[in-house]
Amino acid sequence: MRQPLVAGNWKMNGSRESVAALLEGLKAGIGQVGKAEVAVCPPSIFIPQVEEALRGTPIAWGGQDVSTEASGAYTGEISASMLLDFGCAYAIVGHSERRTLHCESDELVARKFAAARGAGLKPILCVGETLEEREQGVTEQVCARQIDAVLDREGVAALADAVIAYEPVWAIGTGKVASPEQAQEVHAFIRGRIAARDAGVAEGLRILYGGSMKPDNAAELLAKPDIDGGLIGGASLKAGDFLGICLAAN
Ligand code: 13P
Image (cartoon, protein in one colour):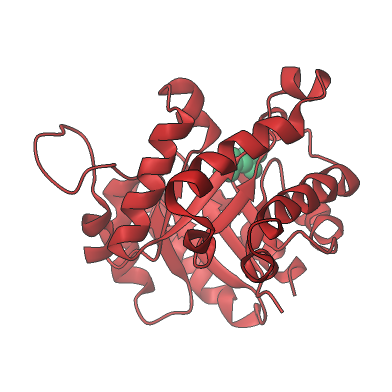
């Protein structure tokens, strides 16, 4: 049985004060979340604050991005070992906002995946198609290409302690959630693609859905057999909403 994972991607939101309040809210409610593993991915500047508040609680934390490099003259970058040093368990790689706004290629994302994993972090590899790609009927090809870049570089065993997040770009921050059937179809495709290389890895792999997941639509998405949790943007910024999604994973 795969343990569900609900991870919050705070993106570029928050202040010392709002982060403190959000963390207090999460800590107050986490006791009710029985089954799901819960994690938050704050902007990196808040990671020490998050570590301080969450150490000793069941809530994990991670980075929203990671450098391909270990150290050196890479202004503005943060390495996997730095994230690990501040208690991170996870690192998101290949979020569509980074693929689009920062021109991250499949190959670069695969290198970030390798850097995260090499340092002992669990990568959360984001994949997903744009609206145009969905309308062209190439959703599966796009997801396959994004996943194969990692599989071809790192081998299928590298996914054993990683997570994949299927985030259709047209559903991110738009309020247009994929229907449970649409999401399940792609999740099953992804698991099948990995099963073709290693059935055991595919069976154990957690595949999260991301894109306008809210407390009121989470339960029906999470009820699908291949949806093992969520990667939550907007709704992860309010403790009540985020915990509501975590509870729906029970
Ligand atoms: P929203 O939940 O705001 O649509 O964002 C999803 C996302 O991009 C999580 O990484």
